[in-house]
Length: 208
Image (tube, rainbow, N blue to C red; front, side):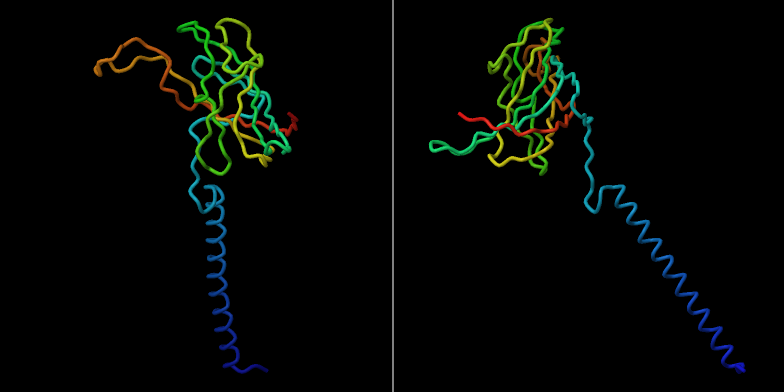
């Protein structure tokens, strides 16, 4: 039969166990709550959200005087030969329509308006300009049906991405500040980011 001292010792031990168990449960709850907060905010590093929408091809983007219908992306690889090193370019294909209701003029897309958005966070890459009808910087006529075009980006020869992102910028039709002594007539300029389009990329080998 247990003595009174043994009973008192057992009660004290039970209270100590319960007190420490409560502290452990609170600590575990805090850790779980912190993990959920970090997950929601993008991990330990502060997450920087985009101020423009991210679309998945096929996608239509209206930007300034252009309407793009992005369809696909191809990594065109030229293997190494006896006379040249291996090369690769990224071609982003789209249907292009001139919707310039302000000036209603033929024009070609500037290489500044389409940018390859690298996955490593480095600066976006300007395109080499667009090609329509196999002609670089083809001028697209206002009011006609869309043209099948592509824009090209220089990429490393071992570029193997299965998905790429292209940033689209649109110009605004507005004048400069007349106080600066320049013309107040509006024109297309002051481009700003409109959207990012995500496209699956296929590899195509080409021999020259």
